[in-house]
Image (cartoon, rainbow, N blue to C red; front, side, top):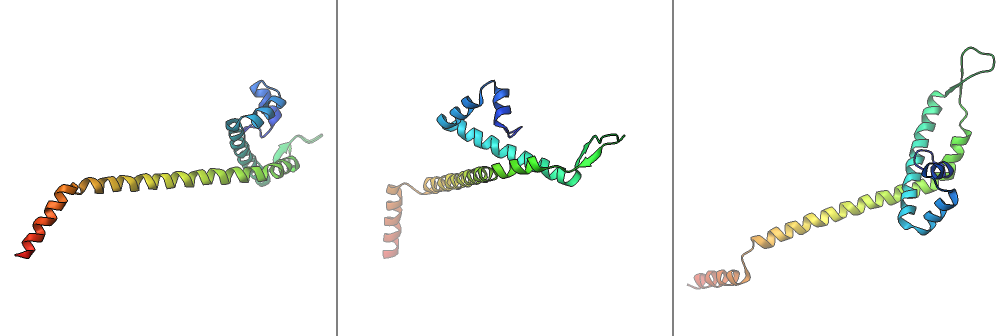
Length: 141
């Protein structure tokens, strides 16, 4: 799916029908997530390819000419970009949110390690009490 942005082509490559692919997407949450990631990746590839075509065009054979003619026919690519724009943007937002969650989890883990080191460096409660009593009686004198 990421390579072609085409469900039919991806299903053929996988040796299944498009109906089976859509049903798997509907019934299997992990497959659906993988589908969305592949769609987003395919959208990114298509977008880069389209930008390349817009900049350089495609050389196509011209009738009766010895050399090809540079053509800039991107209507199909534009339709695909338009069709998948929202789902690709949604998947990017999910990916970015997952990255933010991973960062927060990492920060929380580091904070917890710092708390543990601080607690390990403190004297045990009984020892801390006797130190407090000793320092208190020394100041009474």
